[in-house]
Image 1: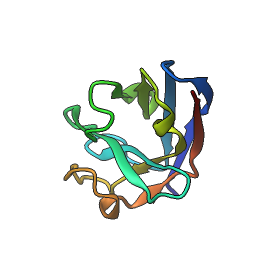
Image 2 (image 1 turned 30 degrees about the horizontal axis):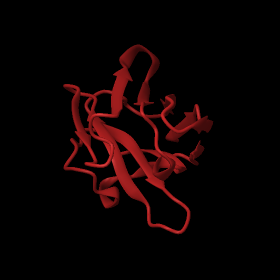
Image 3 (image 1 turned 30 degrees about the vertical axis):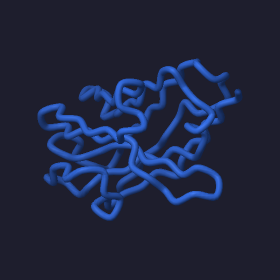
Length: 126
């Protein structure tokens, strides 16, 4: 059974930094598309960043490009999201997601993702 477990959420002041982690189990970690989506209060869920664990290729939403960095630790089957220069509009529930084994990323399309974590809440205060 595939499990994606997020951690690292919490409250931080505007301009601060935070790192989210997503640990994958029951899943062939290599050569897969994994990443992060978020849902702000009252808004639809949107793609934030994806990484193809095969070659480290990354994809970012325009709103976070240059501030957020997605990375992987193959030894730990874990994907990270380093978030810097945080803004109040970054507030939301952050979800880790992954495509089925062997599928690359095709952009920030949540309909492509087959597995989802339960989410971790990130709150940015102004």
